[in-house]
Amino acid sequence: VAMLVGVLIGGIARLTVTDLTLFSFSPEFFFFVLLPPIIFEAGYSLEKKQFFENIGAICLFAFGGTIISAFVVGMLTFWFAQLGIIHHVDKNNPMEALLFGSLISAVDPVATLSIMGSPELQCDNLLYSLVFGESVLNDAVAIVLFKTFHKYYDPEGPEFNRSVIPHALFSFLSMTVLSILVGATLGLLVSYIYRHTTLSDFPKLEASLLFLFCYCCYATAEAIQLSGIMALFFNGIVLSHYNSYNLSNTAQVTTEQFFATLAVTMETIVFLYMGMCVFTGRFKNWDVVFAFMGLLFCLIGRAMNIFPISWIANCCRRRGENKISLKMQCVLWFAGLRGAIAFALSMNMPGPNSDSYATATLFICMFTTIVCGGFTEPMLSHFGMKSGAENDDNDGTFLGIDDLLVVESSFARRVSESIHEKYSRFWRNLDENYMKELFGGAQHQQSIGLSSRSYELGLADENRDDYE
Image (cartoon, rainbow, N blue to C red):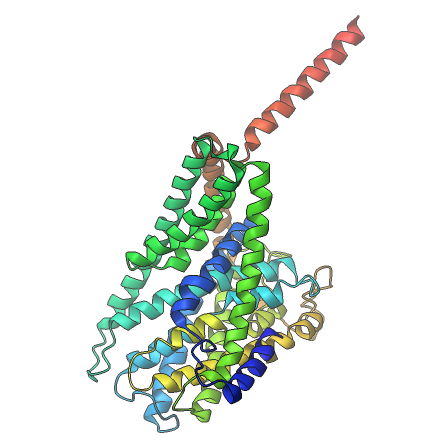
């Protein structure tokens, strides 16, 4: 709705206003003002149990799936340009097309959270966890991948060296790991400060400082050429796990409501600006063929990462409710909504063909958000992906291909479950005995111990009464 309202406002502004600067989409304003509150709130309010129970599949979709989709879309764009079907695309250097593939592979959390997270849809918990986790990590991965390819692309030099791609992928992986470490480290530092000071005696101060610390995390990561989005998301997770217990009751309620309200406001502004860009964007080249072919390439790239990666994930997952069924895979493929992040990156495309990429991206974003987003509820109903709905893949309508193949992967499943169990036990011990003592958090072990002790004392009192 906000996007359609933005289209209307943009059309009126185009007819009545001479200077359209205020109504134009600014990538800098988006990345440094609008996006950080949305990403931080997503990490801060994250359902950590669901997220980390499916962390393996989410990382496969977010990292492996984004890379697959970027290369599929990018190379299809480059090959079709060489065949002469698509114009206004560099036919000599595939790095420009790979830049487009990386930016258009960003499954936007703004659109996904607004549509899939709606209480009226009653989306299946496992499906929502996968879509949400993928979208939040995927956009950060796409931004890092875009920045990495951008370093190795020279519009003036048509020659292309294939050895650049392995270097670019290594740079991408190192930037991702370092961004996560920066976000988690700064989150632990903030938690330590709140844990060992008396900030909780000043609710207004602790709430305002928390907001400034969060923006400091984003700015720090960007200043050292890392991904502020990736750092901020994991910063929000760490602060939610540890620091939320260090806040006073007043500050806990204030920060949760403030961040949620700010995120919703920013989401609305993002959709408004995207809609206004239809009329206020100063684009010189509108390539209709490229726009429709780009949409087709996105669907192909999405299919080539969702279905194979789901099969790989199922090889290591317990069967039954935890399995990613074929119906769920179809909904995951359909739910690849593109949004403001892809469009903002397209506004930073280098080279003489930047307008063609920006207009194609805007068309894809609006189509997936309005059309695919509008058909999300019927898709969930048709495939039985609503909470409490029957989900039977053996009804004859769908025959899950994974059912024929996962049978042979019991060894992989046993290995993954063994690793998961050992890791979970190690992390619980470390978290309860050391991390929460330093940084704060709910002391589960302590409460369990007190309950057990009370129960034992109660039994002793009953035995003593019986004896007397």
